[in-house]
Amino acid sequence: MTQEFSFRLIATDGKARRGEISMPRGTVRTPAFMPVGTGGTVKAMYMDQVRDLGSDIILGNTYHLMLRPGAERVARLGGLHEFARWPYPILTDSGGFQVMSLSKLRKLTEKGVTFRSHIDGVPYEMTPERSIEIQGLLDSDIQMQLDECIALPAKESDVERAMELSLRWAERCKAAFGTQQGKAMFGIVQGGDVALLRERSAQVLSGLDLKGYAVGGLAVGEPQPVMLDMLDVTCPQLPGDKPRYLMGVGTPDDILKSVARGIDMFDCVMPTRAGRHGLAYTRRGKINLRNARHAEDHRPLDEESDCPASRDYSRAYLHHLVKSQESLGAMLLTWNNLAYYQRLMADIRGAVEAGTFGERAALITEGWARGDI
Ligand code: GUN
Image (tube, protein in one colour):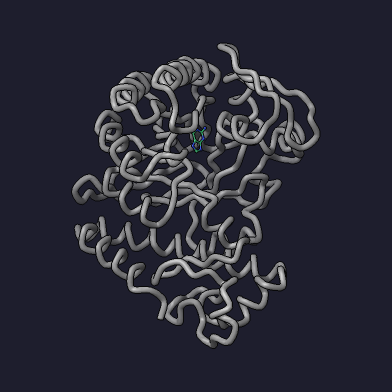
């Protein structure tokens, strides 16, 4: 018998939740951070390393994979898990967000969106039905509805139109997905920075009785307090017994503050992208390895870490690698950053279970402020 997709809450501390999503390919401990594996790779990392850091699930992108190598090709090659050698859960984004931010000559209608590939200009059509079909060809475990995410600031009428369109697309995605044992399709709350629109979006999506809910359209140009206000109005409208995923967020500070408001899942390019640009996340805040002050610094990034990248290499060597644009610099800093993010998530989960999340979050925040000396 195949396993069902299920979510259970293990503990709560205020609005913070400690839970577990179970599906045939594995269990996701929440609050969870999903490393971004856009094109079938978490850039500069081996999948074994990603797993060893405690990642239960990674994210893949419909948009990138449909363009290259193509969804049908991935299916012929055994699906994304087999292709990328990641046999654990995968969540795929629907493509809506990436089409809007990356593609050329976009045209959006009720039916869907037509666009040209940012790689070679080839035209494509993406409808809610095609997005779900592609995510099925990839064999994704958690599939996202097609939505329209608009950058902020935006006119309220534009925000409302995109939110209502996203609700209609959610129904079409639900119909296209049907019932699939062991897999899930999540709806995406939109509504920009308008509390009433967020509430309506969350209420209508809740009525669709989906297996999980994402909050989209945030961290798209608004200040952090606005994002947190939107979480304050959205989370209470979502069913308590389903996972909640804040898309594309964020910094370690965003994550602490969003967990405090009831978010269970996160993804962000920040640790991987910053790693490729010479930035290290640590218990003592962010360190820019490009800076000349590291040129003769013997100390590692974090002598107490159990990650070799953080513990065994001097800042002087990392500075040298980054300045020389060596691949190893990107690899070591990405490793350090994902190790830091996953350690933060484990810390958060432990604190919520212990009922000490507030105190722990305050201590973690203090550590960042103290600096790295
Ligand atoms: N990634 C970050 N934000 C969003 C969003 O609003 N929608 C989708 N589909 N992906 C996202």
